[in-house]
Length: 63
Image 1: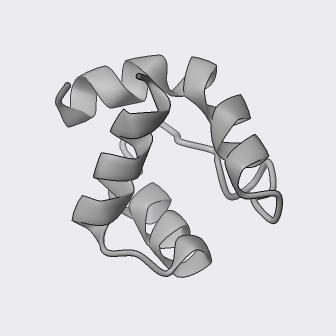
Image 2: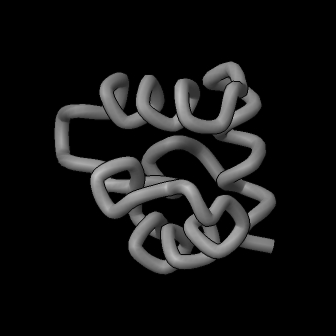
């Protein structure tokens, strides 16, 4: 699953993300068109992970 596929499935996965990390807010999980780097930056800060780790974590939510 590449980043484009992740973005397409994010609406399904963001609920799982918020369940896994209860401190994530709606603003944290907002992924807007053209603002990928902003999204990954928020997730990196909140989760304490690198961008690659965030991507892997999101992929794991979809399994």
